[in-house]
Length: 165
Image: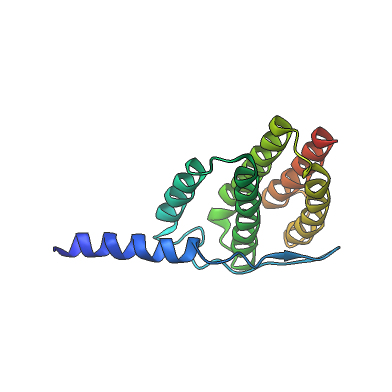
């Protein structure tokens, strides 16, 4: 086995272990504590993680498993956005922000498509996420580009909450 094959196998194994960890991201009424992800934007292995997540998404067949998967992905994307803001990875803020908004939209579309009873719960989660995002947004000076990217996520959650009502 050559070195490149060993690295690929090791990378897949690490990603598998990380993805299969139980998600310990819990939301309180007005605050949220995020579990740090082992692989975050900017990491060499991040593209493998995203590929793995996309593959897992295709393997969700039941209605509830799709919703659960999309909810967990949204929490992961929030954790990743938090990571890039905390670590001041300015080159990653835009993509992390866009990924969060994208996953919020996917979750909303799935809830509407299935006319799920989880809509009210998701609206409440969006409110909690919005308050958390306000704290992330305020790390940057008002009306700067990074401030506006996170404000866009806050606005997106409000728009999606209205769609869920």
